[in-house]
Amino acid sequence: MRIDVITLFPEFVETCAGIGVVGRAQERGLLQVQAWNPRDYATDAYRRVDERPFGGGPGMVMLIDPLRDALVAARAAATEPAKTIYLSPQGTRLTQEKVAEFAQRDRMILLCGRYEGVDERLLEHEADEEISIGDYVLSGGELAAAVLIDAIGRLQEGALNDAQSAQQDSFSDGLLDCPHYTRPEQHALGPVPTVLTSGDHAAIRRWRRKQALGRTWLRRPELLAQLKLGKEDEKLLIEFQQDTKI
Ligand code: 4G3
Image 1 (tube, rainbow, N blue to C red):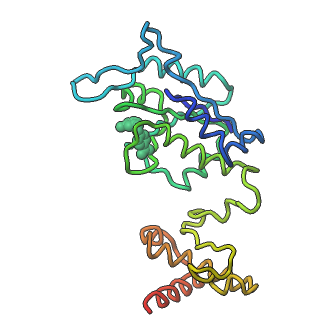
Image 2: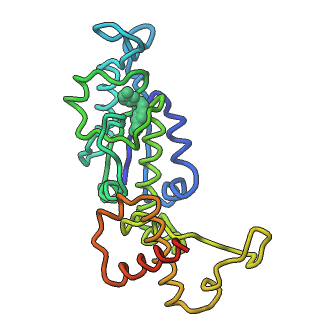
Image 3: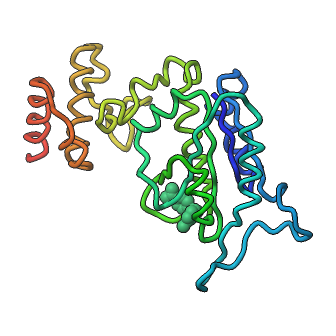
């Protein structure tokens, strides 16, 4: 997969995409990330990329032309067509389901705004989707793009090793993850739940499922409301609810 990013901070995005699982995915040739700076496409003597908003008010708005020329250059860097995604607080909320869908694509272009955002006419003509990573405001779209690249990059076939399998991820089945423990078995902060050291793999699987269901019920009831639980899950959740009442 190839991701082109239109950003005033290409080093930031390239650094983020060079670290950890996503960096390794790039080294393994599973993912290619390239940043394009609209300032390189500014034509005036000051290399302006922003201007004051029509109608007045605070802040600046990103100019159409440097962004459009950067987009044209990014699109021309590969033959496959690419959807252009604008990261903004006004976008549709990103979900793991949407991430999984993006991860199937061969190519995408991410557009990062700064200041108060981008001239709406550029978005109308050039952006296919507007995505938000959550209900908060960042000083630029770069962190949102880095989030998207990370979430997509780790889903590329071969990016995760077996131990990190994406099948075990939170949200992959609509539930939060269960708690995890490692050595030592006894610690001043408390013991490890005995079932995890019992060697009874069926009991361990049941316990983890019960914890995942219970935590989702406690912390994110709206996620649970979206699911149709099976008989066994219903039973495990009721057990958890009874355990928490004591
Ligand atoms: C466009 C994305 C971009 C308009 C970007 C601000 C938060 C998100 C920006 C705008 C961003 C997000 C740059 N902040 N929640 N800041 O995905 O008002």
